[in-house]
Length: 269
Image 1: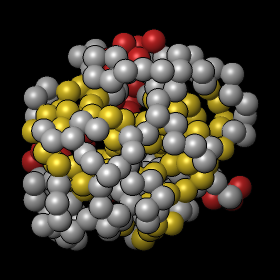
Image 2: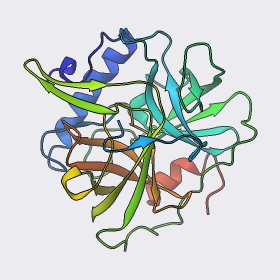
Image 3: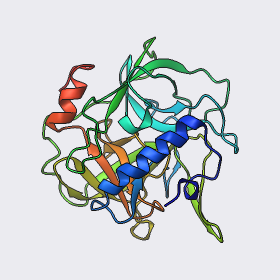
Image 4: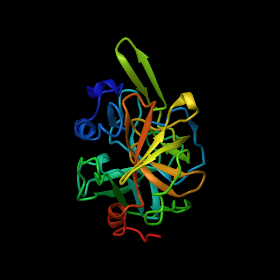
């Protein structure tokens, strides 16, 4: 699928390169979910308000044609460490900006930091190492960091387990003569989904609105999927189906590989 079918705005050069890389990566993830493309929006959800103040968005250097600025999501996991997805960055040492506003507008305060992706990041479906952190120049005060899971603690989750997904991605998918459109407003959104399956690297969550589930879409990449109503980030949003209505595919944070990367930046439970 061409990139312009899932963004209704022209993209800065950095984002265009990222999209091309994500579409290539989606090919190797195709067996995870039909017509898979990397998720980058909360669907069937509502504004989060102050429900999850430790969830933030990565802010682009220039606005899109619709005036929005955020392009990926993530979570504060230590006062100076922000968790996100490797595919949200351009490379090791990239300088980025992060907002924790409930509804970001240009000129609002942001936190500056340095992007660090897992050096083993690939597009392998069994374990893509699609995980990254931003080390912030100044610690965030007044926001309690989210918790991380213990080693292999998600392996025996039962089907139907509820998750809370949060992010700054598209809030609605439209359909018209030109294909599907994705609407953005830089508002932190929240929804609930339920567990379909667990495998070595992934949690697969239902986001089928017909069953009352919501989920993620483009712009939510790197954002958290909290276990139930807790502040424990079980997995980060990575990919899903092309029109954001079936499956939310998320990278587990309790695996040996995820923990090996994170242990360089935070103390793990």
